[in-house]
Picture 1 (cartoon, helix red, strand yellow):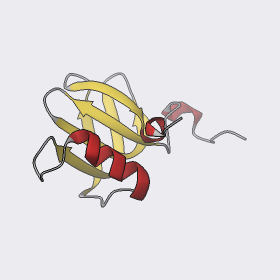
Picture 2 (cartoon, one colour):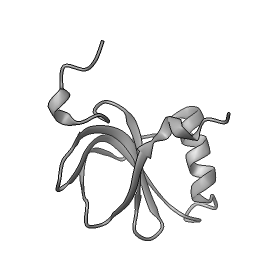
Picture 3 (cartoon, helix red, strand yellow):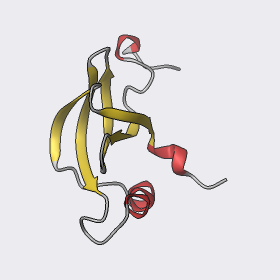
Length: 93
C-alpha cells in the first residue's frame, strides 16, 4: 500500500540525508521534493568535525539512534544541495 500523498514525491515521509555544498548535512523527514528544493520536517544538521565527529560518524549514529531535531520545518534550495538520499541507505550489507 502506497502513500496517499503521491504528489509529494517518492521520498515523502522518509528520513533522508541532504548533503549540501560544503561540509553541512541535514537529516530529517522529507515532506515534499519539488523542482525548487526539498521541504523537510524535524530536521537536525551537522558540520564535519564541528563536535569532534566526522560526517560519517554523525550519520552512523543518526542511522542507529535517530536525531534530535533542531528545526521543526526547513526548506533547502536545490541551488545548494549536492545530494539527497535515504538515511536507511547507510545500512551495512
